[in-house]
Every structure is written in C-alpha cells, then in structure tokens.
Image 1 (cartoon, rainbow, N blue to C red):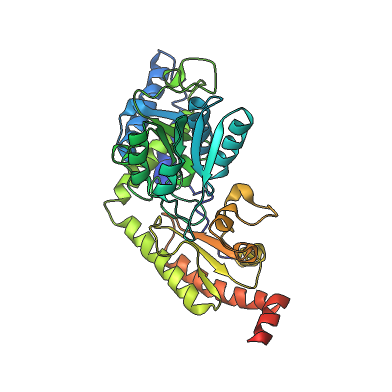
Image 2 (image 1 turned 180 degrees about the vertical axis):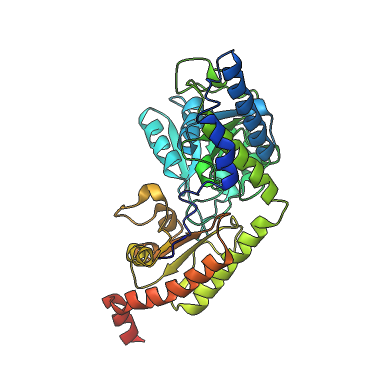
Length: 388
C-alpha cells in the first residue's frame, strides 16, 4: 500500500544529505568532543562547524548557540534560566505546552504569569503585550509560528516592545526554523529555541540562541560543556545532523523549494475547501509558515478522520503530537474562539521537503471521499442535512 506522510509538524524524516553527514560520527569518528587527542578534536571540529551553520541560519554569532536535547529543553532553559520567584512573565494562550507547562510550574514556584489572548485568526495583539508589561516584568515569551495552524506571530513588533520596556524576549522558533528566514538581530529577541526533528534533522537535538550578555542559570549541572551553559557530553551525530539541516534550510530560501512547498499547500487547501462542504481554514488570511494548513470538516470527529485516512495510507494529525489521545479539544483552536465541536473536527496537514506534487494528489483523492463516508455515519450530519 502506498503511504504518504503529511504530518511534518509532528516530526520530519531525515533528509539523505543529513544522514550522510551524520554517519561517520556513529562509528569511525566517535570521539568525545571534550577530549584533547585526535579523536576528540575531530569531533570538536564537527560540533563547531555545525554551530556555525546553525548561527548562519539564525543570523547570530556561533558563540551564541547552545546545543540542547530538543526544543522542549531549549524552551525550559530559556524560562527557568531567567525567571525567579517574584518575576513576571508574559506569554500567550496558544503556546506549545513546552512553554505553557513550564509557566504553570513557574507560577507554583512564585512567578507571576500573564497569558495574553489571541484573535479569531490566532494572532497575538502587540497592544495586549504592551498593556501587560509591569514594573516586575522580566520576560516576554511568544512563539514565532504556531505548531497547529502555522500562524506567524508579530515577533518583530513584540521585540520592539520588549526593547522599549527593557525586558527579555524569548520566542519559540521550533515550527519556524527552516521554513521561513530568521534573523534574531532583526527580530530583536534575546532567546530563540529550535528543534532538529522539525527541520529534517534527527530527534533528540535542538538549540537555544542566547544573545551575548544574557545570563541564564543552567538547568543541568556537571562539566563545562557549552561554555558552562548546558552540561553533558555533546551528541555529536545529532549536532552534525542539525548543522547540515540548517545548511539545507538556508539553501531552500534561495532555490525556491520553500515557494514550491507553499504552492502545494495552497493547492491542497483550496481544492479541499472546494471539494468538501462545511469546511474551512483555521488561521486563514494571516501570515503562516509555507507548509501548514489546519482545516475543519464540520459534522465529524477529527480523530476518526485521522484513523480512516491512516488505514488508506495518508498520515495527517489533529494537532500537536504530544497531545495525541487528549480528550479536550485543541487549546490553540479553542483560544481562537472555535467551538469545541469544530475544534475536534479540525485536521492539520503539514508538508516537508521530501513531499511531492503526487503526494498532494493522493491526499486530494482520499480526503473528500473519506469525509463523505464518515459524514454518512454521523447522526449530527444527518440531522443538519434534514434541517437544510
């Protein structure tokens, strides 16, 4: 059976070039990057080349990049590293749980957290951020791109607000890195998180940009790795993979591959809306990353659609992979004002560099017929049909 994967916001497959770059560091070039002999220095050189590549993708100095075990650790390091009891932090209601649950823990430890709302398209208002600033505000943490809708937040405006208020600004760039150009100097952020497995690097590797002069308390205590900012022997193969993925991402901004992905996303989106009644796009009409669309199909359960499509060879999702199996509807979609039944009827399609136009054709063939079949079984749809 043919299988097509359109759930790249959950995780991406390794690109062949990334795997090829990593391979030598699993066996032949196995040295500890902290060792001073040949084997160690060979690994150290690979780590520093990767650091340069990631810094090049983000527009910063290599010394401002700290490698982590993933995006969640990077988010945690940014927040726990800065905030102490009595400090105030501003975040949004649509953040990834890596930020939201960290904020809940910080609240229990004596920090004050303001959760600013979003509008019906999933956008944070910079004015709401400005009004939320207090004398004890230390940090603003607003994601760059939403993992469920792909909506891009006005981080440049928020960066200016943070600068004017003399507070730190962290942005979770996990779903933006590799999809849109990022320049941390232009944004004006002090901290930015990325994750390798969202951009065709391996799982278990990420990075945090820390602007020079920003002092974080380390979460892990041990050796002096990563300039004493993140203890633990470096994951050399993973770091090499992240560096190669960063190089390929920068290349994609110049060779039109991202434009091609955006075209496929738009065709998928338009064609499904045209083919399926009572459907629409969550977060339409505002800037989004080029690979993501979140579409509601009223009168059915999104989980049922996911399962039915998977049985036919198409992998998509209802939202964040870490929330799979959750009884409650998406916190992102309900924060946007969607009623619970529509939030539960929403499905995320996210493309990657490995996808093709034929993959989109496959989805366009399967989704409308599968939605129609599930709606025939839905008593809700039948009642609505009778009313019409």
